[in-house]
Length: 437
Figure 1: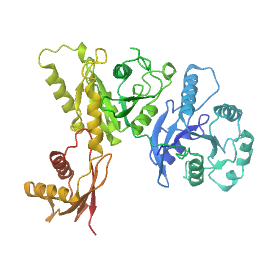
Figure 2: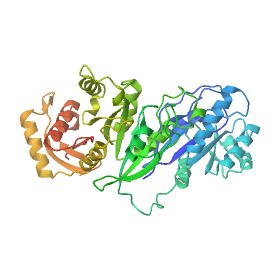
Figure 3: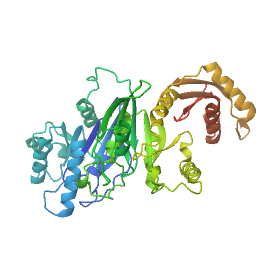
Figure 4: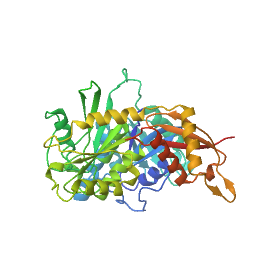
């Protein structure tokens, strides 16, 4: 199921960051009592009545020609372009302004669903003053108070009504979906073209050339169908002006969400960077299958056991990805790229593997006999039963006498025993600990 994306848009100092934090439930955006604090788009996810949504906070839009404000306005326009729904935020304290009307005209041109929210309606008198905002032509205004947290239930109810439906999907896609993610200029687009043996997407050594995700289908020699998703490089916010690429982290996150397996691309020439670990963390948190692809291997001096050293560095820097296979390739020469489809098939099958409960519990019994369960204040953890409840990724429920007694290290030990007993290379495992009532 796709997650709707919502952009929060308005002029400066109407309380967008406060409303953003209310909708998300955390203090993520910087909040200050003067305009211009939020300059970059900020992303997070929230939930309403069991349904997830993405939220983009933007800098305040001012219709001036100042360089900074021009850049803020452009960032907001990108956010509007990426969004499924736009929340247009205005302020009851200041009333309807010329700037509100100009932004309202801009939003009409987007052809996107727009929900009008009137912030700072902190008392009943202010709620009666929202009717002037009907003049903006964006339907019924929803009074909210970011300071007091009122009115957001009705607002989010309307957001979910306006959210795009999945009912239009008439045919299920059974292909193996995978994406290339990584820093800009590690060769993701070149890998796509080398696999397809044709120029199907733009390739350049300029950072940020790829401006959107490009889905390409192909069939491997074994007859399995693949959908390949190429994404623009994920860069640190604010490092490069977005008017050069019109791309954001959000699109890469959407590609990860739609993928079964993520190919984390590392540049063999520049080595592992801190940003590589952050990018890989996105895929790990999403529970996706992962392959670590080291590109540009043809350009590396192979002397002095370079292969072993690079592998050792990867395992040290990405300890949480110990299950992920490493593939050293070259998009330029095609070196080892023929192994990638086979590797993806293997990981896909591993992600859909089911294990009988009786076999699982034999493994658990052997594990406990080898390494007794931990104790705390004289009480010992008892594991009663384990069963698999889901695939993609493989998910197991462990029934115990007290969840507080399940130490993280013992949970990791059980996961390692499952990996030793069954073949789960390339996929994370999810263990859920439950008390048996």
